[in-house]
Image (tube, rainbow, N blue to C red; front, side, top):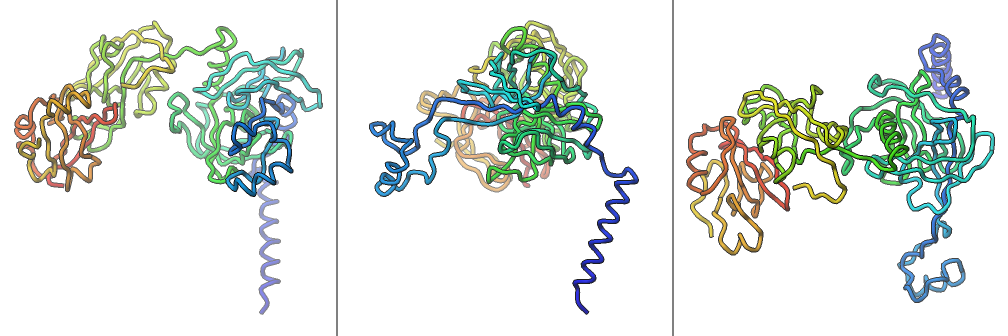
Length: 467
């Protein structure tokens, strides 16, 4: 029997099912959102200074616009790209109007380096825009056009978003104005590399180049985020899109409008996630909180009495579910204000009041002796005078060799172990003998946690005795 009639029948049943589901209200309806909010979404095109074609020597600059010369040069310089790209430095993006007198939110990277910014409205009117302010750390920018009585978007509360909820994006992917795409919220509170201050909303909404800076709507027609980034190996949509929560963006907006810059709080600590093994080592009941691995000398936290090994669980009563949440919470505090840190130290809760400092962009984060017991697979040595001088080692023991449990824990030769956590108590190390005595009392299978310095940073690393 031919499969074609069966396939045709299956397709008809599928279409019928979708139509019935839509009629029954089981599928979302986006048309009302587009009709009521689409007029407040704008297309942004920018022009920047022309860039030389990569690979052309400086003495041959100025011929980038000549395809004949480029073709000739490709024969002798095969590393030249096949296409010079946009020689006039044009780029596209999106934005949305948040004030009827012409204030527009977009991404900082959309307008970065722009010499000219052109905003086009849905009614085809075009305006030159100026940058009011931009904050690269949050990737939020405020621009303004000279217009009045403009349509504006409605703002929502991203904290009410639920994973699995339908969301809608309007933007200009690849220059196609006011394109509408939809999907669901895939996750909330995502931390991306080098983006510690934004709890990104992850969606599977189709976002492509040109969508950047456009709004992300919920089904109530409220903006809950600014579409900012995609995860892609090809430059196109791959099902992973990230939006800046609108409450974060509006805080930046208010500061940029008022002061032209964004001020963020800092307390001078580096933190890491609390794993199950670390929780066991520190005598914690859960893995919530942020484990302090470095305290900046002379910083607000040190002055207030915060110590390495403390686990910060709340800031001003706000829970710290994990290490990635703490920088965002602290950044939201105003410099000069006082914050109450609820923390756990050696298994006991306590509170510390700290005066919040101001975060600065340029501020930095922070011969073999007898080996340790074989069941750790860790050989430590007291640093020589030469090592202390060349590497700037002021304390701790140098890792000379790793195997077994130590190797599996990501310890590496050359690491400096400055302290050890045994039964919830952190002890700074001064000698190999001291370490051996501390480790000797641990039973097989018990967790041992080390404070390790590497490449100018510090973190806690756990391993199991005899594991």
